[in-house]
Image (tube, rainbow, N blue to C red):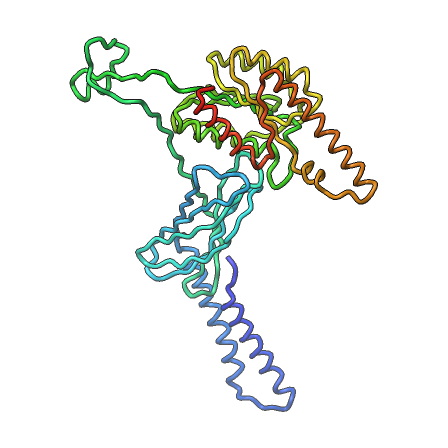
Amino acid sequence: MKPSRLLIGLLGGLFAAAVLLGALPLLGIRLADSLMPLAWGLLLALALVAVVDALWLRRQPSPRLERVLPGNLPLGRWSEVQLIAHHDFAQTQEIEVFDHVPEGMAFDFLPQRITLHPGQQTQVSYRLKPLIRGHFHFALCELKLPSPLRLWQAKRLLPLARPRRGLGLEFHQLREFRDGDTLRQIDWKATARKRTPIAREYQDERDQQIVFLLDCGRRMRSQDDELSHFDHALNACLLLSYVALRQGDAVGLATFAGNQSRYLAPVKGPAQLNVLLNAVYDLDTSQQPADFSAAADLLLTRQRRRSLVVLVTNLRDEDDQDLLAAVRRLSRQHRVLIASLREEALDRLRQTPVEQFDQALAYCGTLDYLNARADLHERLAAHEVPVLDARPGELGPELVSSYLAWKKAGAL
């Protein structure tokens, strides 16, 4: 609790009046004898009123706040967060709120002043932008509540719980039991509810399976803008997952070269996108080198059914033999697409005019690196391994275009 500007102003005014009353006799100005006791009386009255107002404020209940967050907070993008205030005040009240945003997030439109009207709930919003990937904990919300006479202001910290959303599963359809159906097709809950045999109807599998083999090693730590190559790669995988799931395909994920390997078996249905989001939201890169052979062996033991394997990495010229051997083993059982991220800084450097010796060295080194990288792509293409070489920001749309083209051609 701290004094408000009104209380400080009143105290300052009384102090200035007391100083003036004490200084005037020194200047030879005679004052009425009752003025000094009056000043002390006003000061004591203000102190008494301030004490009563402070006790009143301590007994005043805090408004109830509710925080509404989106289901997911995209990295590097603004998302709206809502704060809803519920209260039992009989008079209009103005408060100030400041949500304690976790470290690693940028925010806008905080703090905010809220006017609470009797019998109404009030809603305000602010913006959040995660700057890093990981798990964030929203806990306290700071509230500044004025006293009834506006002489004090109390700071209160309110714990707010985030409501959780459930995940649903979907099925094709239920129908009445027919001759020729097996007992395995009977849905016993629906049968008990309808009091007639109900069977699940299955349709022929026409969907495909897509598995992202995501590099989490040190080469994916490169950064051209606010996002790293790893962040761009994750965004591209999620974009293609959204499109593929809407096409009826199953989507899965496997990681390698990270601090902890993760694997999600391919599953179809809209709910799988939330499963993917919950599985990768705290993924981060490591300092480990990419071991393509180990990644291929691990995926072959886990994924038996033929699938489209999208290997997302940043190819280097030294990847020749190890990468080619790993892709050959994968290609015996799966269709493989290599999505390689190309540094935008190299493209900019290649297009920069050369005017000095240092620029000439950098230009020649860049061309050397890009030519070696192009040679690797040609060797992979010679072994019928398609390579998608894209800038980080363009990887998502190009992956979707390749997928839809193969889907239309029946090449998956």
